[in-house]
Image 1 (cartoon, one colour):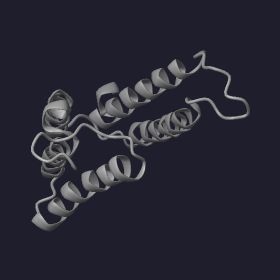
Image 2 (cartoon, rainbow, N blue to C red):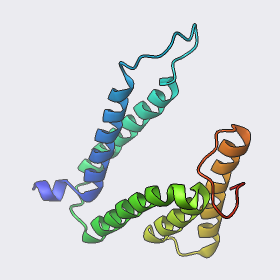
Image 3 (cartoon, one colour):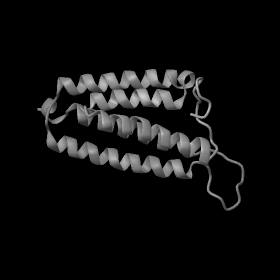
Image 4 (cartoon, rainbow, N blue to C red):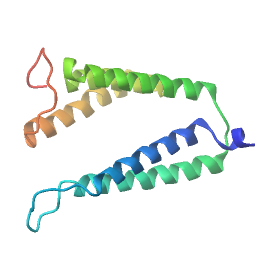
Length: 152
């Protein structure tokens, strides 16, 4: 009964909920210099984490109610994505944010079943490119750069 109710999607939603909860908990009780009337540096991340917790909780409820059971392919896909994310984090400082993110995006899109090369290219180049433009050029908060091209 429990294996029919608790699918890999519900397990992932539960893990995401626990991670978001732990990160939110870690933002409370931190001490910062007196900033006057300004918000402390954890204000915006705390909002994002609380939204993450709410979405993960809703996702968990929906997945538990669906009761689809375990899918071996889904678990394999999630495992590959988890390993790829760890490898991404290792190579982030070596290859830079843009190239590492392009490679990870292509892999994730292929694992999720996207086969059309145009959306793969658009998302894999567009999303990391937009993030680089936002952080490196507009906010002047540099991301790890590529050894081949300093501007990306």
